[in-house]
Length: 163
Image (tube, rainbow, N blue to C red):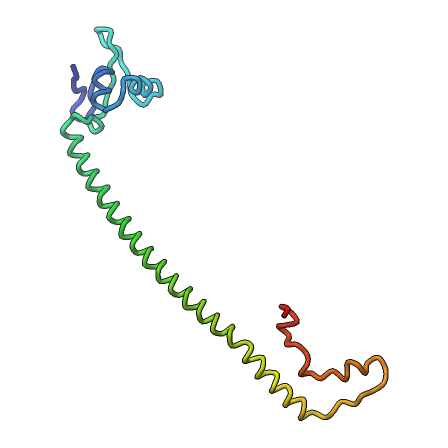
């Protein structure tokens, strides 16, 4: 029942039932496409409704199957490319995780050395205060602060961050 309207245009005039079978959808889907305007409809002399299909979308037409093969090949190429990109990203993530792990270990090692550095700083401050002249003890409200040696003060970072 189908007939080619024009060889150059690639349009095929078929009934609604035939269009549904060629496109692999239901007749209701074809009618909905006609209603939306995505398929052109024409009433024939015999009173039947005909639609115009693009030959490239016709699943039973050999030309569309060749195009479908090219489409499948193109999609396979895209999938292969995306998989390679995923592999590259996975390697980058693994490298980043190793770097983060190494930095965490280095940070922990440095944090363990903080008490050693504080003790060394306390000894050097004590040596410096011994080299300075002795502070006179006075009478009055300022005398208590003058008596506090600098080696007993907490480091600035302990005063700021607590501890």
